[in-house]
Image 1 (cartoon, rainbow, N blue to C red):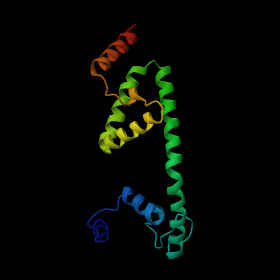
Image 2: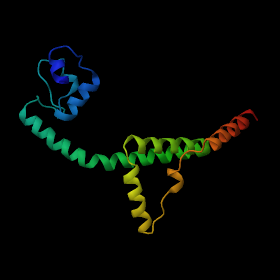
Image 3: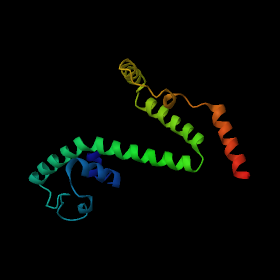
Image 4: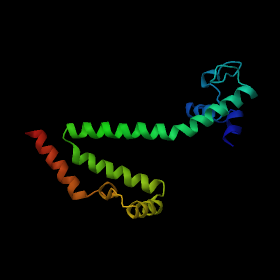
Length: 153
C-alpha cells in the first residue's frame, strides 16, 4: 500500500523509505533523482545487479548480528568506563536497569529470559541477577542527592 501511494505521488519518498528500499533492493538512494537508477554495487540497477545485491546482502545479514553485538558491547564498556571515571556509577546503574527492563518489555522477553535463566543456572554458571533487578527508586533518589551534594562541594 505504501509503495502504491508513493507511485501515485500521494506519499512523499522520505529518506527513511529510500533507505528501506535500498536495504531490500540495493538501489543507491542518490540515484533516485537521475534518469537511470544505480545499484550500490556501482552498476545500473537491473535484474543482474539485484541478484548480486541479494548475494551481498545475505552475507551481510549473516555477519551483521555478531559485528553489531560486539560493537555494542564495546560501546557499553566504554560508556561504563566513562561513567565510573566521572563518578556517576550509581546513576549509570539505574539507567542501565531501566534500559534492560524496557528492552525486555518491548520485545516480550520475560518468558524466554526466565527459561534462559534456568538453563544458565542449571549449567552451574552465574546469572547476573543484579543487572536484571528492577531499579530502586529510593536508591536512585539518594544517588541523585549524593551527586548534587558532591557537585556543590
